[in-house]
Length: 217
Image (cartoon, rainbow, N blue to C red):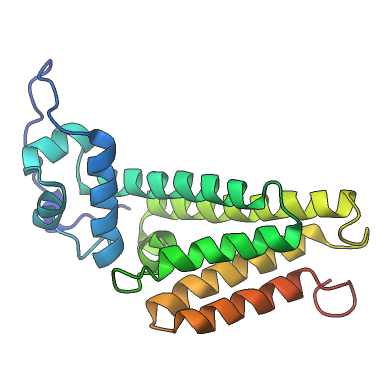
């Protein structure tokens, strides 16, 4: 069952049809995403979202629906951007360099130099809501499985091209690569230094690409 906060209980009437929007929907969604990322879903009020986007409540509802619908759209945006970044990082590089690139991009995202460390939107906010919200749980699961699938596809390619031994379990190595990514996100949010996270990433790559029988399968 979806449990809505008090902010979700009263829905203002949507704007009249035909009224042109005077704001950039994409930019507004990005601003709302950052607000959820910083505060979490439950702690982000409609007043917070209005302040972050510069829109009043009726405008937010008219463009995105209630807070729950807006949050799901924020998760979708974050997932799409993450999928694109992972695909670009893994393409045209060795498996080792590709994984290192993914983790380097993640570190920049999780620990920005101009703001407090925030980790991953999915791991940091959706994971806490997933046990009691089916839609959020589904969005979280689909996103995490998608990241793992991208790693697995690249590792299978590495096996096919002889970069990794034929006996390599690409599926299990991909799960390990994802686990490193998620651990970085949690530890970033907990305040671990970027240097420690970079060391974790490097060790994760070595383990994920180690010859069968010497570490990972």
